[in-house]
Length: 291
Image: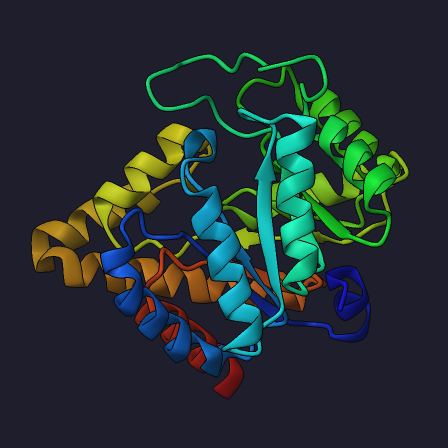
């Protein structure tokens, strides 16, 4: 089923994002986490792939197994990096054959070792080029895109970023999932700005629970996301006093409070960046559904 149809019928909801292991030897452990996370009853799950499409074949195989073996509604990530019409068409053909009806269309990050994004060809410069091609060639495919509550790191300002979000949605995508953020006011300000500019399609907040200092520092460095005042200090103090377990406790409590407020203030659902770790996500969802 198309994800935008599921969203319209189910509010609020949880969805999950998975990251394919680079080595197949890690797959048994990965699918153990998937089996655990089925308890969340996610509305859908998304599956990313490495820079430059380095795990694209793995993504295809994994979304197929999630659909056929686990009964989940999967969405495969698809980027412009190293893309060509033939490669995109082949990938979408194989998704269609597997019964997977949804993709997340992204420009993508520069391949590993490169600091600047350079289009590989004239056909796919930006995410809206990908959306346009998908909707023309595969009109029945459900398509989501990314949104950036603090603006994409390469965008000159938030106004420009929202202009491109509307372009992606007007081109044929049906919903957006945000990059991670930690301050809810940034999300609601972004959604309000988007509405003023004519965007009515769902913008789903993407939440990354903080489970370690290393992960959060790397994440904000890559994404440009900012932290609420005092949050990093709280995490660092937790590490000094109780080590990684205490950092995870503080990060999980922040995620629970953040998600509760998002839902109370009308967010359509929550997309959890799982990092392939079931325990934290299950703790968060259990806390929210029992309160």
